[in-house]
Image (cartoon, rainbow, N blue to C red; front, side):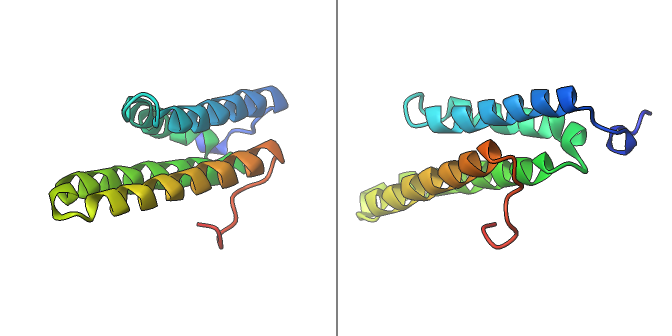
Length: 121
């Protein structure tokens, strides 16, 4: 088996991975319009391409995106279950605001060619 993490990343390969990372941020943003499917597709790509970003500054973005997806899915599920109790709308609002925050912070760091801070995580 070829260990991708030990090979040196060329600038072209890093640029391709950066575009992929931006596409995943876009898919997370499209989640609000397309009922969650882009969120699931984005996290699937994160897991599929995770080995390729290992050891680069983009690895922190993939970890950030994966954490965003799982917690957002949990927030959406909790809001759906508690909607009848009257707190579902509140939970949904918190989840949406949290997602917008995470997407914004990630996209700004990506455009600045920076890793996500450990403190932001």
